Length: 200
Image 1 (cartoon, rainbow, N blue to C red):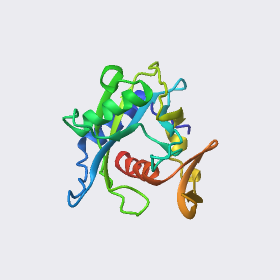
Image 2: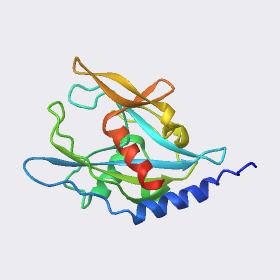
Image 3: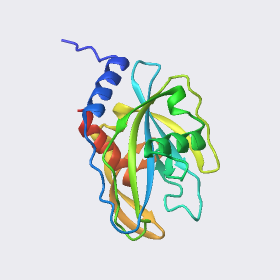
């Protein structure tokens, strides 16, 4: 018996319900840190599937995530009343998409607070959002390129393998998602795994 694949709209409705019902874990605010937010952006694809947006960060000496595959986002500014505002502003600045005008913010995921020496003391809150399939995505000084990837491919366990990652001349083995020529690891891979757990 052939089981029909759920439509993109029904899958988005399921994802939205799961994310809205989830109570995200908030990181402890102690010591010195700064806050940031990123946007996990979904859209319907031409084949009635779902796609997710990634950016490749521009190579910059002052960016600890220089050249990595990531979600749009960045540091909270004084103009941002909330971290959701940060995600919206940074997404617009980096890829030219207004998440509130061209789509919707669904909800937040668990905050991340990496505690490793090569990274600054940051707390990152991911937000799940959707945009219209025909919304135009651009680049900026902070973004070298962007690409859409099928959500099912990104979340496929077969796409994950232990990979040597070189950061500032130091190699380390980390789990990473491989999609075409892209390697997705670190906080971005961690956010995707938590997102998968919540929507499954």
